[in-house]
Length: 260
Image (cartoon, rainbow, N blue to C red):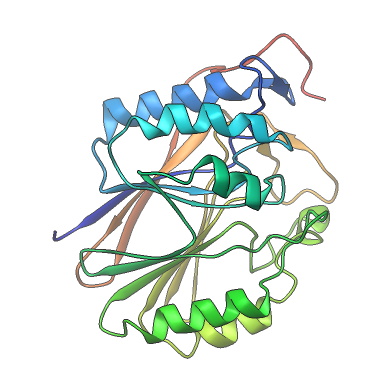
């Protein structure tokens, strides 16, 4: 395996019923549309990556996620977000092809999946155990390039309201990252918008949601009218990353409710 190809889906916010809306968008049809678009355009990847908020505070939504992605016959790498129930998520997805947390090796790359959730909080924090797991995963494969994945953003995005619910102990996180030159990229969800920057040679990437988006650089909560999206990632043998955010056309998944 020379180039490792990932399809990154994030923040689908599923409910137990199929036609529930979140901010005016039917979340399950919107996820289905994003996945169908990816399958027509960029298929097959080596794995699908999903960085949290699989459900919208409704564990019954995991059954839809399991049915939809379980049939792909590809590894589905998952981690929880602040709207997920990590224990319920593990119970519901405790089967192939789902991989929840830990480290997965694909080609010359190690993919590290972190749980940054705090029970009852929209903000994130990596526990002592999660930080130790990150250190062990990176120290255990120094010969591999590493892509580190979590739900909460570890850098400020310039939105006052959103930066209040980011990763609270980003300094501890980056202290570990900076000790390991094998880390080539960090990927997250949570922010419902695209972000692409470089920090000390490490690519920093946020991916828009498969449902509604947040308006970038907004002082207060505001929605962006941009459509659902996903990201493609090519992890190359030399450690470089080629990536693209793919926006869906039109009002896919829109319901009849207002986007309030």
